[in-house]
Length: 289
Image (cartoon, rainbow, N blue to C red; front, side, top):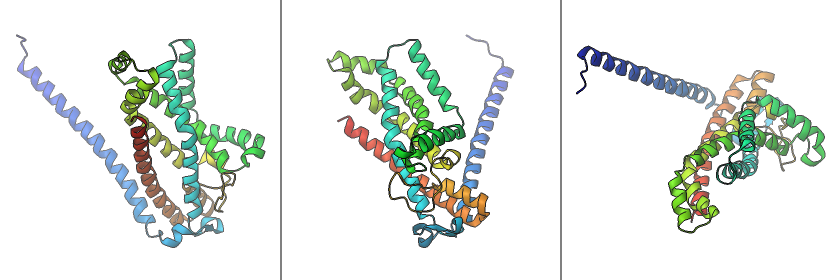
């Protein structure tokens, strides 16, 4: 029998209560800050939102009109970035985790992805401006949705690769070994066992990447061009809602229009995130049957 002194147990219980209280306060403070920001932006900007604001193009540098072109630009950009980055990022993670043997080259690739994830977005924007806008301008359209999307892909690929690989590594080896023991192929095991099991982590990484694309301004300021017109193809210039908000607030000083754009941006982020989560679950469900 362990001889535990009563005073020691009292101190342990006090420390536990103190730790629980501090953690609860930290969580509560985070929620209060989050909802405080959301409430302020929505309450200030919701009065600007109307059918005309949502479905008309901005005029006079964004001080008049609406945000229709910026909404379309955001949707086009996110869709194109995900269309390119998702299969490349998840496929790379599957190859690194399931096929590539351990060794120096594998460690170099992992270190490189971690290094790329920490590079500031303005550096990606400068590279995208020089490479996609200037050097490949004849093929990408210069300042265009395609140039912005390719820049966005470089920004979020490291995040998707590392987060997806960690999700894949969390799959128990016993499940994979049991599947292979039944005579199935490695790819069949990946498709039926590994990917469905790792779906929550992969989906989370992609949703976080969507948030980074939607909220980015510096990189897309140098690649999208900031056009106020509605883009008719991926080779046209455009602007996202975040970029529109930044330009309106900094260049015109119209804070009311900027807050209205921010309210629309929050609503759009919620819609895109829920839609993306539902689509990815549907795709993996079909993929595993």
